Length: 303
Ligand code: MEV
Image (cartoon, rainbow, N blue to C red; front, side, top):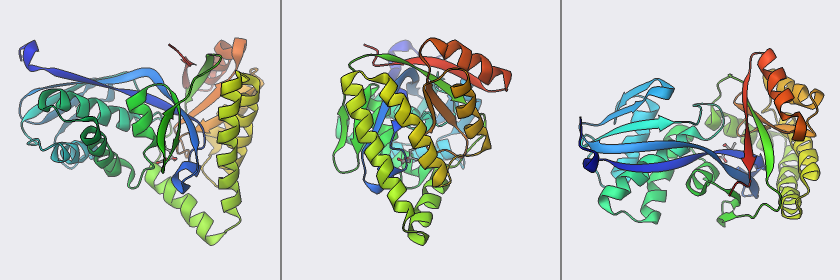
């Protein structure tokens, strides 16, 4: 047992992309929010073990697993010996669900390490970006930014993250399809589609416009308008080939249960769906559950 005083802790948030996923890779704006659900990393002197019981993850920094590789890259950027620390993770964010678990893990670990070494915020962010590129090849950086901030915000590649006030906090249903996905492969597929079929780029541009409209709706507290944008965005995301039967079905199920709008969130191909359902939230969860999918309700714009 390691003395508590030898342990440092860092936290990263899960995230949902409300509007603009995939478009953000093309340099367009996206609207995202950190979740109250976090990953908490505890770092203590040790031999490079990486353990996350909630994810059934037992790895070694630098081994062949993606987390092992990612944390090795992160430590390298922070000038820390790979086998000098043990990491124990308390994860509330479900893994591989499109809710930014890898970014939340990287932010939590980088902060736990920075609390020992005194590394500054820019070094922490560079280390997180290095870890994220192991998981997702060439990510836009939105997951890392949302994991770091934990609130609603606007992100684009040129300008980075800007916190956005939420005029009327609202409840969001989050449904986990249980189907795995490969973010890097989906991003590459959308890029190939736009190269081979240039008109597809207009769908991407429209997704960026929807994100801007979502920011206006959020600022005005017009949650119904935001929900309608969700439906449009889901259609566009399906149009560029990143939805699937499970996500389409979950979005339809949410609407049938009374949701005003629903869409896939994140890379797609599996992962998660979000819906704005107001008083029908519990009914949305019940119907998802009846079809074998787990869901929860989170508040966007929590203090
Ligand atoms: C993944 O959460 C969001 C994508 O836009 C990829 C990225 O921004 O790196 C699909």
